[in-house]
Amino acid sequence: MGKFSLADEALTRIWVCRKCKARNKAGSKKCRKCGSRYMRAKRKESRVKK
Image (tube, rainbow, N blue to C red; front, top):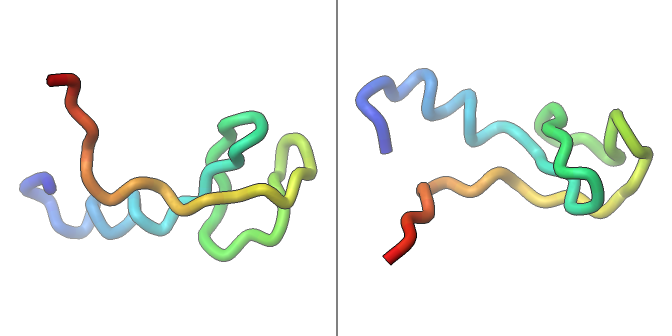
């Protein structure tokens, strides 16, 4: 990914709410903002338009 491996590790430990797109701590059971349990892990690689 980037040139700072420590920062890359911190970014991949984030969970994103699929309902309101809020960032949450790793391993969260529900969203801190809306309370939804519909979560996903943050993507590991960047997506680029082709």
